[in-house]
Image 1: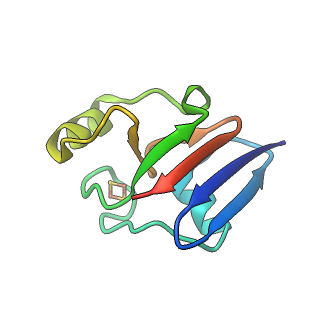
Image 2: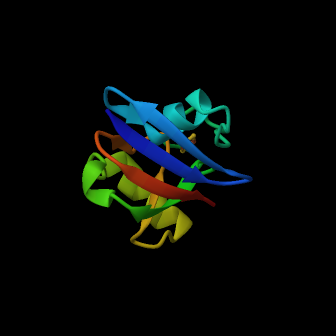
Length: 94
Ligand code: FES
């Protein structure tokens, strides 16, 4: 069991038993991220800032890297739809 913490309109903690995307975890916690493209790494509206636990996220793939470059994202930012957590993670919703 591990925990995804999201700091958005309010701080929520979602307890998970298996790997899940940050976007899916947010929906499970009833604080859904914006997701204009439906989670297909095209829009960037699901951008989050990873405050802790970045090592517990899946690596950045080529598609996500391309969108992050377009968005001029900082190194601590990820697409919630592409970053899957497998351990404790804390993210700020951008
Ligand atoms: S929902 Fe569009 S990039 Fe993540």
